[in-house]
Image (cartoon, rainbow, N blue to C red):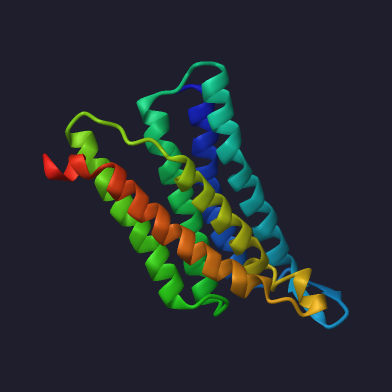
Length: 191
């Protein structure tokens, strides 16, 4: 268990913390700017989510720099991303800030790619995260944070950032899923 893998595990352990602050019934207070009120719970959840998401780049950087890239890390890293994003999406649906179909499309893609990885692993192959897959994760993160904090600060200028970001998240998620299957079709063909 090297440092990069430990950092990835921290990201996994932060998932329930994000969900706790988003879904807890008790409000720890409200932060109001003009007509927009954001709960401290939402702010804490967004900050923890950002910290967890930022470990994604850190663990990969450390693994490459120290030459400690492992198959466990190649498996845990995308799994941690999927857990973090899926938990946030489900929480946002529960909070009625995200349409359920968006969460279903995104989570379905995550399951499909994970299934592809499992089929490859059974054949002794490891499918690492692609550049497009990493871009997809960052687009999802950029879309999720404003959803958590009610489109702040874009709400003040009437810019529907969360709507645009949600569509971008769906499009890049579908396209990156297609890309994984297109590039790894031999895994399915010979299984």
